[in-house]
Amino acid sequence: MTEETRLIHSGLAQTPLARTVGPPIQRGSTVLLPNAAALYDHGAHVTYGRQGLAAQNALTDALAELEHAQSVTLYPSGLAALTGAMLAVLAAGDEVLVVDTIYKPTRRFCDTVLKRFGVKVRYYPPSLDAQALMAVCGPATRLILLESPGSLSFEFQDVPAIATAARARGMLTLIDNTWAAGLLFKPLDHGVDISVQALTKYVGGHSDVFMGSVAVSAPGLIQALDDGVLNLGWAVSPDDAYQMLRGLRTLAVRMARHDQSARQVADWLSRQPEVAQVLHPALPGAPGGDIWRRDFSGACGLFAFIFKPGAPMAPAAFLDRLEIFGLGFSWGGFESLAINCDPQFPGRLNSGAYGGPMIRLHIGLEDPDDLIQDLAAGLAAWRAAG
Ligand SMILES: *Cc1c(COP(=O)(O)O)cnc(C)c1O
Image (tube, rainbow, N blue to C red):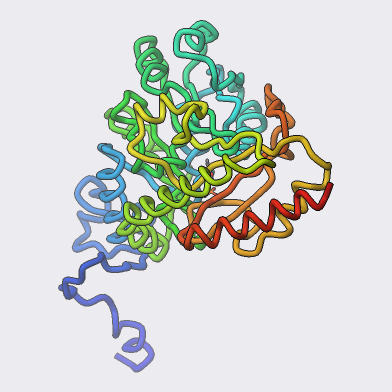
């Protein structure tokens, strides 16, 4: 062989690999098969890298454990997981019922792509109980979309009752379980068919990787989701899958700290004169608290509060004064964040009847006393604004 050829064929994968704690980050589009017969023996061999290699497989195993699921599929973002799951189970002529407080980009997908493909979309208020929701279902209703709590205004739904009632009538349920990160609430244990989460948030945990997962257990759904990924061509990189696995290792300890700090901050906020209401389920008398205590093993770092009516520019003055809290979307990372929610409410059935401007906080892993000082400075700016 000439040097040209030798350079191309030297330094290739070596087996066996040394056994490290985490899986190898196998980069591969081509998978080399042992013989001619194996090339088309898709049952016995992985034949193409898009199906996922060592790191992706380790991640889906770990997520199946987390979600109490038989099977998990991966997508390049949380939104892609939500839309991929819907495309895998819906067909033209079906109807989907969507909770009014759904993540806004999910709503945009329903209103544009699903409608264009002949799927009817209707919205229902998160306050509907299972019986009232069943009463608005029609003969074409195939899927009910849930998000509990809503990730801006924190309404809790009676998910177990809705899932049980829907299943009895042959309808599927899909939940966006990002708030619980698969850890605080186990949708499949409560009869939900499809549990989706944006791993981008708490599983990633560092605000630097996109990914989404869909967890299912029914054999027909496992097949439908696998086919959906195959037909639509979704794949995630082994490097990103490895980052998600790394995040999973510390998910429980990070979450405990997010929860503890968020409760401390929420409790402090609830005693401030500028604040009308804090939407955190652990606070006494909070909306949804009964459902949360019954179904969830804890809370995360994400909650909201409502200002008393004040000067129009006061909420912006509050946000602009914050120094530790960053102003930005997304959440679940190690750092604290804040946004105003009101611009996202128009278009909902309930387009923002909350009685005052709403601010959403993500409480990160910083010292909560420092966060409270930062918020106190923000409240001073709110007062100074008017
Ligand atoms: C962020 C988020 C998503 C989408 O996740 P991406 O990875 O950003 O696409 C979906 N649902 C909820 C509730 C989210 O907060």
